[in-house]
Image (cartoon, rainbow, N blue to C red; front, side, top):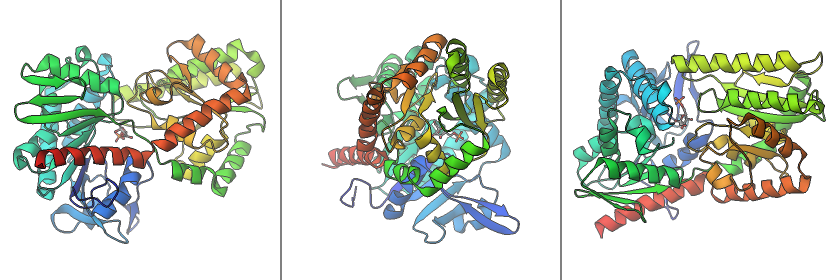
Length: 489
Ligand code: F6P
């Protein structure tokens, strides 16, 4: 792959993701553009600009269709179009069955080892296959023989094989699976386990966040295919004439940007105003939790631990505030409606039990926060509570660490989040189900010696800075380029 000195391809990069990097919506008669706000999309945007590549994604904005040129393509960013956004239009049935159905009521709970929340309907699978085909056809049409096609996530378990069939040996295919990969015993619950693994084995490179997910994937391959040869040391799977390297790449965050925004005047101003508005005392101990409102995030478990903490440590009543920013998500799905209800009822119960005239233990933020405000909130909170019952990585934990400009703050982190593999030695580790111990760990994180807390944070900041979002992408691009070189030698 041609490269610009770093490892990112300088041409021929095709990214395939469910969410789009730019979306257009109507503001009265005018069309406005929503830009990538953070995470992978914002990080990949400059790479795409340099590579002048193509991004294939679901066109979900209400004005997206108004701005397309020929063939549903639009140049982005709008003020200086340097790469192509190729939109795939989905009708209501496709959204219901591919996105809310197979992706989020089968694969999501399946991969998070939550059998009880799987709702399987045959029509979900049919539609998932159809939509994967549409994305695959678009990606193949955009690629040339030198291209790297990079698939994102569980929405596209089948597309790599479809693309491979179309392109033969041309192009390098890489896939990053952002959520956990479960044990074979959990994965085989899926009626299409074999087809999905076959789809993924059409990639030259398949990435997961942590080694455990790679091992679980390889164990599944071993159990499912008699004709697969697995090199357990390198992670290579040989099957027929194809080879897939399965490797971990623990995703990082944009630490430079987070540090800059966390230290901005806007961050400071938000924090001061927020504290005043919500009546949070200057010397209160503030814990923060920021999540998409999902049953995998362990939010009711966290609230129960806070309740236990206030019960068992009455000296913290009036002194401790938990700020919860939980954004509603996938609300069409009954399991998400249930978790939303459970979270608000539990928060209310805790407040009803302990609140006084001038203090509330749980303060909820429901509005969207600009990045400066979010990082201001992180920076000024004394601890972050990340209590996922299962999580691919959890970038909130890393963002919180990156925002600790003075190495203050403590991270209370679930053993069940992928990021525990990288930060677990320095975080205050918890099992979200062990309410009493969770509460005691919160107490310890608050009362530990300041020097001890700072040392932990200093180590974690070193780790997240050394392997940030750019390093993560470089690692993937470099590995993919190496595989391509091997096959062309
Ligand atoms: O964690 C997996 C993931 O795809 C993330 O990459 C993303 O932030 C989140 O889920 C988004 O969910 P949705 O696109 O369904 O709103």
